[in-house]
Length: 354
Length: 273
Ligand SMILES: Nc1ncnc2c1ncn2[C@@H]1O[C@H](COP(=O)(O)OP(=O)(O)O)[C@@H](O)[C@H]1O
Ligand SMILES: [Mg+2]
Image (cartoon, rainbow over all chains, first blue to last red; front, top):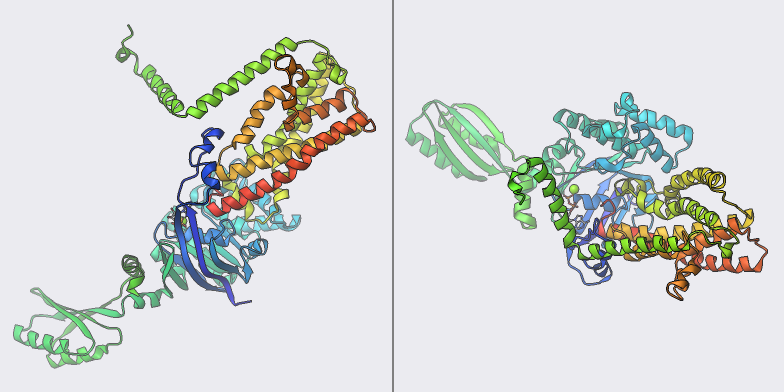
């Protein structure tokens, strides 16, 4: 058994392209509207949702799958939950094959899918959880205790006896998490965990994931999100997925380096100095190894120099020259690309950019 | 002449809704045709029923009112089995339920449990009303009633698993289930013995015996009206015939259900309505 909590090998998923939703039509219509005939025919157009995904997620880490809408995030999560069958490749959860040993897989992993409709609307939160606790096969007394415990952990205790239909989006999400935690599995997946939550609830929820579930309880957390900031703040590692392909992976920090192996600085120089001296300085600075670009911006009060350098450029070299020319540095700003920029650059550039 | 533009706005708004729905309805040619068929079959079965009225029913050694009331009670008792699963299937909770890892038989039985318990609870009072108010005369053989229950449960579970299997994939009722359910109204002998159909169209009753539901009504009536004993070879033969339906439909149903589940997982439409 490998050390990976989740491992996928060349995972492929293609959906039939024809929408086969013939509900609300008459049964006999099913024969006509791309219905039964299409179900049994072999030739089809497909939408590739996953195109050979290889991932390895280690025990105890918070892993983020980052990608735009339609990239295949939900598909990957549902495959891991055994709710969608892949068309190619393999996937393992704690070493168990998701196709051959689905029940073992489900004892190791649970998910919060984010669909608020997954409960019975007219039952209370507690009744809903008790129902699922029984389905999970928890012994009666333990189930009762566990439900109380989880409602308490999520701060839902005082609303436990309210009908589920009266729950807000945030509460519904928390109840989903309660359901996912009933079985106490070592791995929890989240599909867009904070989508639809107000900023304060989102912060709380992230705190819960990172500090409670991951740090204190040592679970492996996998989140799919298109929220860069979220990935950057709570994930140990992220993978970026686009059109069903993983186009980059690593720690958020490393990813930034990956996309842009250069650094940007803006130096503000106090007061004016004469143009000739400035020009000489610029020439000398530009001749330093590692300097990619140098720009000057001047107004009455100050001069700003933007400089783009290789990431292993020795910054003191440029300071030395400045001292030589008697320039007084008022401010130095270093500027790094955010994960958001990395993300957009990668997606625009496709795989080529690596 | 009515000048439409002078009608109060509210009335025109109501008409707009009706017009929209009529136009929408008209686009579904098949639906229009099948709705007409459904209505025709309903009328036909009541018409035959009216012709039949108040004759004795030698097939089950009983009078018409007993035959009819028992038929309706059976309908209320056993038919929920075939509808319970399909009607109660909630695709939105389906994903969450599957993630608990429960087995298919448990899921199927679980979905049926409440509708069935409910109809069992109402079964006795319904019979009592039939007996006390309408003078229904029962002649029950408990053993063959139990056998009729088992056989019809298998038949109806099989049928309903088939339709659920299809529903998981197509999100609508499959044509075969629809056809069987529509025809049973006329042919399964709910309100008149199927043999009576032959007086309208000779030989049509033999078609009835190919409908699984016919066997459900038949076996229950044999055991509740005629007190058919299990030791009687004639009863045994009838039960055996019904059992053959059960033996065919139950495994097919299980497979169809599994097929539908797998197929929906392939299509990624498990949680779709
Ligand atoms: N059941 C389905 N049938 C057909 N296409 C689907 C189905 N589910 C998802 N897709 C398509 O697969 C692609 C990936 O979808 P999804 O995994 O939901 O992406 P994400 O969660 O990253 O937004 C999209 O193009 C989407 O339209
Ligand atoms: Mg998604």
